[in-house]
Image (tube, rainbow, N blue to C red; front, side):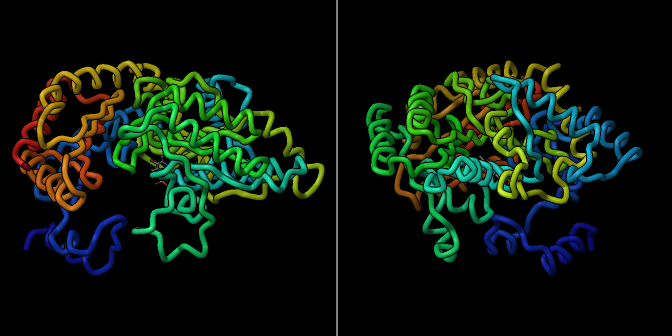
Length: 431
Ligand SMILES: *Cc1c(COP(=O)(O)O)cnc(C)c1O
């Protein structure tokens, strides 16, 4: 028996895989044992291209030597020390680097460990801020239709979907939803709808949360920057805080450091995660404008944020993030993303009028091909395309009927060309 068969047996006996239906588990999953750059190797020695940057976080590929070295060095010096009542150098430096990336550096960074926990913190900070200001009625939250902000309960309330979340209906507080200008919907119509919601809930909205420009889990759905600007203005006008969830889009992915920059706005709270540590260790943050932070002055119990996670801003993860950010600057990741986008535009041009393709969407280093047809059929087509890609050594994971590519930003040009063409061929083969 091969070692990998043995591992599969152990896995089948005891691992509960996230986001994986049981039939897929039974069909046998690849066992990944090593990574380098945009490549992964499985236990049978097969080499795979990581077409989704391991859930969108390995921005500079796997095991980048500079990040690995930073982790090693930090592990030898200080493994863990908490941020509750103590300081450590990594968190102080990382917060400073993150502040520098914001439109205005007057911010405080609340660290967490996963994306969802940064979103939870952001939402709680926004609501407590209004509470402190004597506006407890400002407790409504507005999210976009099709939003995804993570899988904890408040986050699920922001992106509630009947088909996935029905069992939690009674424990999730559902957000008010506005439909962004996607499909054939114009920015004007979508903005008029948003205005209507603000007027209907006058003075009752505490915060608006968005995935700026790209709704990842909804199928890399993209909407116009002018609408985001309009929504931001509306939320300002109505006294609601504006939260940009940049967990998927941050750190250059869309061709700017942050996707909200395409709209020229300055959100009140920015959530980051995923690529923050280059996909090496869990770390996330809610980056909060000082005007909000200043309300939490500790002069009474409700003016302290009684919230934190054991591993928030942990030293080794912070060291990894500092090394990652250093690399991102050096490699100019936003420029790399724009180059990848241009290559995809070029290679996928023929797909734009392919009868089996509903839409091709590209922004920076995010490319999505949405299949045309009924929901069941497109999901099956996308899965066949995925299988065709796997046969060529490319690990993709479609979202329903959307086949997408979100490669490491350091993918060499000739590899990217090969991958982009493989996607084109896979779509043709799947229909
Ligand atoms: C992945 C993601 C999250 C959740 O992050 P986790 O680390 O998986 O908890 C939240 N928001 C967006 C936009 C994401 O893409």
